[in-house]
Image (cartoon, rainbow, N blue to C red; front, side, top):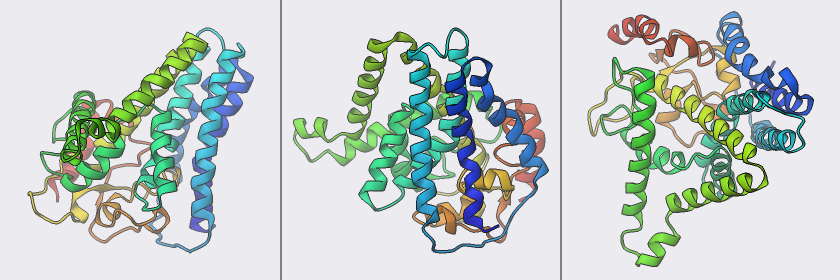
Length: 331
């Protein structure tokens, strides 16, 4: 099977969410269980794929479009199911958790791909995907801080050696808000007071967040609470990915970003589920390279598992340290 066809597996979580939200009951938990458990087992069972096959067909763009549409349908089906009372009581939580997992594995990943493109349509799509999951800091911070300062002490999302995932998430989220705000303040410093407000991307993002939350609360408070659960789940998954991508790695200020400053995995399920985001060294060395052209590089650092199969070890820090520290110390 060609590399571009494998990316279909990234759409399965959205399809499970949509089906679960339309059926109600315990079906709402389908994607939560699938993403948390089944994908991890498949990640271990299906092994690695380090091939660098690529082609110039239109499929990569089609997958991005399908992911965007599928996410919109998953989110709408959540709201529709709650509003029409197909989803009731505690199943609201299960449905929101399922859509939150889908948002973290699809919407945020596609947004990441889109904001790296020069095309304004893609960039705006990425911004709105992030807003749909309540993320108000990633766009500015990722492009202007993370890629500049990766693997240095100034980067909020480079995890320190020995840092627990729980404290990392809190620190990373708080610092990303602060650093994104500082970046916008610096970018707009030469404009007048009115334009510094109107053109501030962070202010725009915060305003949209409040507006969307307000509309949902007005329609039905349960909609607002469900969206907040989606936001929380998507944010946890995003920071989980940030945590394992650069854990414990160090780079001197001014030192070029190299293959040794990111962790990678060639696990087949993780690769194609997340649009080759796990080929992270190549991405940081060539940030504007399309996802389907990212390659496995010689001498890259390899994680002790895939993104899908490391969730449980990472959230049990002692287990994670036993897995990652020998690899970290051997390089």
